[in-house]
Image (cartoon, rainbow, N blue to C red; front, side, top):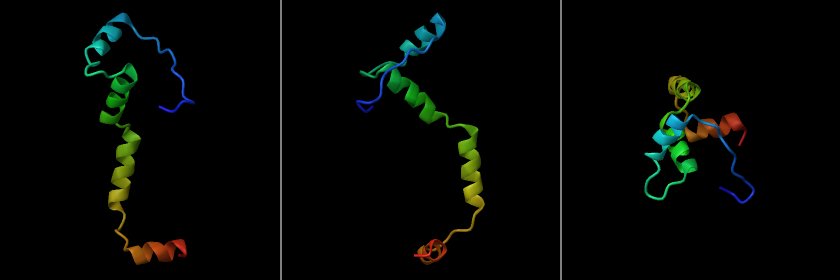
Length: 70
């Protein structure tokens, strides 16, 4: 987190708060815990992009340079 970032308040149910506490181990902050969840479950748009890219033909470095005009 940069010094320009600031913390916010996120309202959650008490039961969610208690469940979240179980994941806060090893000196992790709640921000760390939430980021771990986010990284472990990318949005469906991420997987769609991975699938789209996997269908593209592989390009050589020379082809990439040619397409970019380098």
